[in-house]
Image 1 (cartoon, rainbow, N blue to C red):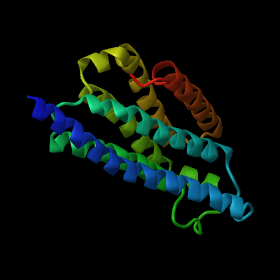
Image 2 (image 1 turned 90 degrees about the vertical axis):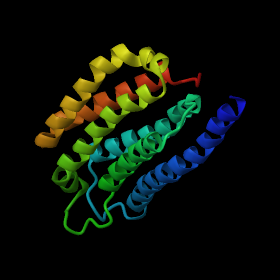
Image 3 (image 1 turned 180 degrees about the vertical axis):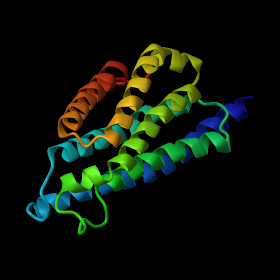
Amino acid sequence: MQQEAISAHDIFPHIRVVMGMVIGLGVTRLLSGVARIVQHPTQYRLYAVHLAWVASVLLALVHFWWWEFGLYQIDNWTFGTYAFIVSYAILLFLLCALLFPDSMQDYASYRDYFYARRAWFFGLLAATYLLDVVDTLIKGEAHFARFAMEYLIRTPILVGLCIAAARSANPRFHTAFIAGTLAYQLSWIFRLFDTLN
């Protein structure tokens, strides 16, 4: 029995390294994109909504790395659980790749690019909200119970807003959506994840 517990806790650091590599690639992508803007500020017209989503996704990556410490509680790792966690991290990386593409030559501005790729971006973002619920369930019933009521309210609302954002190019809607998302994201982190338990 003691050997099983030790093995499970030995596995987690290995998995955390793999997650860290994928999340690190996402952070690198975002920071490189921001650095490119600083280096060439007039190359492409900036768009505040796009930059706000960059901030939101960067915060999500940092938060993901923080809250995934809860995986330490898992006693029995399976390849399925491992593949799920890595897939979740990959989706977050893809969000970063969509915010800063390899080339912007087909677009006049970040606004044009953002609206042209909004269906992909918000489709993946909706998927991350759904995966977050599964991730919380993986950590155990007690962990899920801590967030259950808020998850039942927030997840359908956020997924619905992502669907609306994927369909709409209305700048007012997108401005309100990202402003509300950032405010809620910060509230969520500091209310429920400020200290690791």
